[in-house]
Every structure is written in structure tokens, then in C-alpha cells.
Length: 342
Ligand code: TXA
Ligand code: MG
Image (cartoon, rainbow, N blue to C red; front, side, top):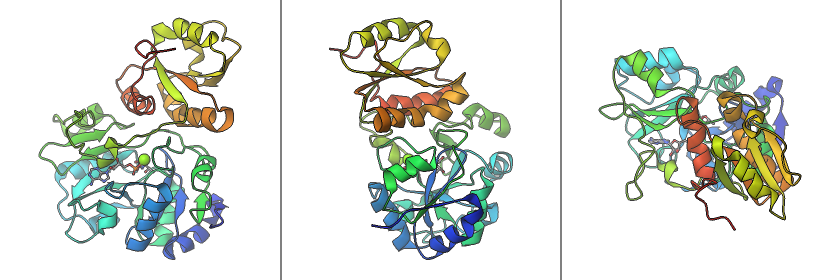
């Protein structure tokens, strides 16, 4: 067992030393915490899969601190891609490109001819990458299958003893992972919705892109390999509650013998919460709800041990598409009204 150190943002030089030695260091971003390892060190990258319990065919994002750093791996960066980078980097947009053959190890790409690149909107992490002098692989720093971590404490809970350290920069601001846009296909396609919206991308490029490629049928292989696995699932069963169903849902909760977790905006609920319900406040709007979603799921698992979590639905547009994409997965797509409740 390793001793997992918590580094303050002033101590990133020490964290960078560990990365150069091939150790694993979790880092903050604006979306969720990432699990960093030297992307050019195959042994270090392999240990990321072990630490997370991640299936080895699920490729990793390459986290860079500059456009120059990415150009070491990609030859053909279209005019459109350059526009996107100028406008959205650093930020919550991950771009997939064909890479120079052999420039990244199979451990990073999962054997694909493409790789995903992202420059996070967090200067501490960009400095960490500069100090390490290499790009870092950066999957979310959770145990595979669990909600993504939005605080250093979440990372510590999942990965203590498995990684050398965590750089703590407080809670993340966006809360859901980056938008993934495939630039290696004829028409750019969104593989995972995030805070950078498809509509914003279309507006910037002045052309249509493909949406909803993350919603594939059961027999198709998802384009983002990670999307086929169970995801974001707490131990409790999550039920998604539409705005108009809260009264019925709380009535159902009230008649249960055990405690029930409730994640919602205060405005959703109207009056009194039954005594056996434990409230987790999602704040005031879709932005605060996205920021707090994963923390709420973890709160009910790690601090309350409830069997059921009722969680507020949002309209599936704008940031709501990203929020609902994660919430649907965490609930196995169960909604309050159509679940078979006993
Ligand atoms: O916001 C984020 O993107 C966070 C922070 C830490 O940067 N990272 C993150 O990484 O969410 P991860 O590994 O949890 O999710 C990356 C997703 C996976 O579903 C993976 O299958 C997909 O990106 N992916 C990676 N490389 C790919 C490629 N070449 N083609 C298609 N999908 C790819
Ligand atoms: Mg992840």
C-alpha cells in the first residue's frame, strides 16, 4: 500500500517529481478530478487502469498544457479544429484526432488510431503538466463504475493507498465531464455531452455536426468505448423524478420504513419533506445541480447508506443534456413513475 499524500496547490513541484518517476497523481480540473500519469511512460499508464479497475479497452484522454504539446502527436489539425481550440481551450471540450502512428502507446489509445486531447481550465494543473514536462493521461479519478470525483476527498475515498498523491484545489466548478467531440470523422460528432454545447460548436464552425452519438442501440459499439460500461452508479438505487411527480414520489418515500435520499432544487419540492427523507440541495438551477450531482450521489452512499435516492430530472437541453446523460446512467434509466416499486 502506498501512502497517498494530499498536495496543496503551492506544492505541485513535489507532485510533478512523482509524475516524472512514473507515480500516479490525481489533479484538479474545472469538470472533475483526473487521475494523472506520464502519458509517455507505458508502465505508469498501465498502473492507471489497475488503480481504477478500468477495463483495458477503454482509452484515456491525453491532458495537455498547450496546443504545441498536442502537435507532437497529431499531424493533421484542420482549420475547424484550430478554430475550436482557439475558442474553447482551455476548457471543457475534448477533441479526438487521428494520431501519428506509434506516437502514443497502446495503453493510452486502447489500440485505436485516434486519441482524445484536452486542455483543462485549471492553471494549477496546466502548471503541473509544464513542471512534469510531459502530457498526462487523465481519466476521471474514481474507481471504475462509481460517480466521478468533484473533490479531493472523493478521490481519496476511492483511490487511497493506490496512488502517490492528490493535488487539492477545492471542489470543481462544472461538475460533469468534458464534452467529447470526434474530429476524426467526416462530420464532427459529439460522443459525450458536456458543458460546451453542440449548438455553440455549430455556431462557431458555421455548419451542422452530429449530436447524440452517445445514444447508441444495444447492439452497436459506442464510438467512445467508455460509454458501454456501467457508470456513475452509487450503491443505492437511484430513481429520476420529473418535476410534476415530486408529490407522488415523496408520498411513496414517506410510506417506506427506511430513509430515502432526496436530491433536488428546494423549489422542486414545494412544502415539507417527510421525516424519513434526507435532503441534498442541488442549489438553484441546472448549473449548481450539475456541479453537485456526483457529490450528492456520493454523500448518500458514503455518509448516509440509504437504499434509495430520488433525484430531480431536468429538461434534456443545454447543460441539462449532460446532467441527464450522467443521471440516467447512475439510475440505470429508472424513472420514479415507470419503476416497479414495492
Ligand atoms: O472532463 C473530463 O473529460 C475528465 C477530466 C478529468 O479531464 N476526464 C474524463 O476521462 O472524463 P474518462 O476517461 O473518465 O472519460 C473519457 C472518455 C471515455 O468514455 C473513453 O472511452 C473516451 O473518452 N475516449 C478516450 N479516447 C477515445 C478515442 N480515441 N475515441 C473515442 N473515445 C475515446
Ligand atoms: Mg470516467
